[in-house]
Amino acid sequence: MEAVTAREKGRALIASNKKARHDYTILKTYEAGIVLVGTEVKSLRAGRASLVDAFAQERDGEIMLYGLHIAEYGFGTWTNHAPRRTRKLLLHRVEIARILEKLRDGGLTLVPLSMYFENGWAKVELALARGKKSYDKRQSLAERDANREIARELGRHLKGQRRRQRTS
View: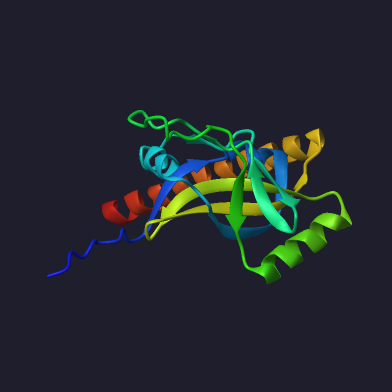
């Protein structure tokens, strides 16, 4: 009888880069696999990763992820990984070609938005993004606040209607 290991189902978030959505205008997103060593996977399963200073660039026709911090595995031995090593991203050749074509046009960058496990595989959500100016950031903050206020008033309005329906 051979042992069958059950693979995880669904999506489990490891880390997200909230600041990226504030600092950049997201144009297009891509899902990429990531090449990891054993102790990195164990550390990721414990949720010990940070995308704060991470970015992706082309190197020798491949896309590499720089600055991703995966903390050393606590129970690792001399085989432990370097926390900020450069990691290769796994994308189809056609996707790489499209991304590189857009990056060469200028003004765009590749930013990781989130890192997660999907059906047991570690994935990175990459975004083709353009940097925002400070006035763009203020404008998006004001827009978000206005939308929140509209939603709040709409909720109050609907709540008032429900009360009137119950009393009549």
